[in-house]
Image (tube, rainbow, N blue to C red; front, side):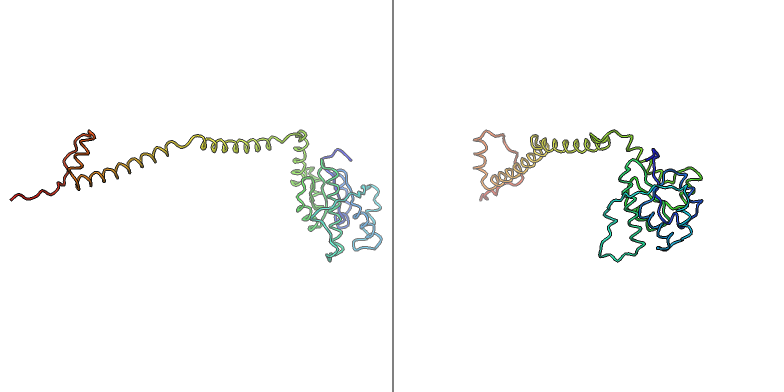
Length: 264
């Protein structure tokens, strides 16, 4: 394989539904591959065994300048499974086989962007849904524009840029810098939370304890005052004796005096 940042994988429609001008434009872009199922399909069309433009297929086969390499690479994918119970058309099965070939080439060349050129919208949609970082699909018209301007389409440029960033990074023997920051932040956060919990266990909240004690003291003082006041009203003599016996300071005269007996 070449040192080009991308490989071109050409699908049947980009050949049978176009013309030699398109083939030349695609060939100028770089190394081109034909999935084995595509090569077989073009041969069948040229021999009248499959539907398609027989003349165009023969013209492509006779063009020695388009000696594009046939690849047998293929790979399974969860979104590209053909079940025996599915009643799929021949065309749909062919599209899935081409997509599997594209995945196989992308897996075999993880440092290159594999560009599938196809005029089948359904196939390009399948490739897009795979969300592969080094695999994308474009129509033949975009490929011709790319050849004329020498500017890769945005989807290809984005994939190549991503791959270049991956190659420039060191071997992932240790977590990447972003991962390290994330792990460090999470670890610091967890450690801080644990320290707060430990400090709460070791160092109680003195402010809350102080407020509780003040409330308790005020409530107790109020209750004792009520009891003493009631005792003074009910039994003033006993209360006075108790007060003086304990050496407590004299109390002010209360507003309510006990009833005095009437003198005749």
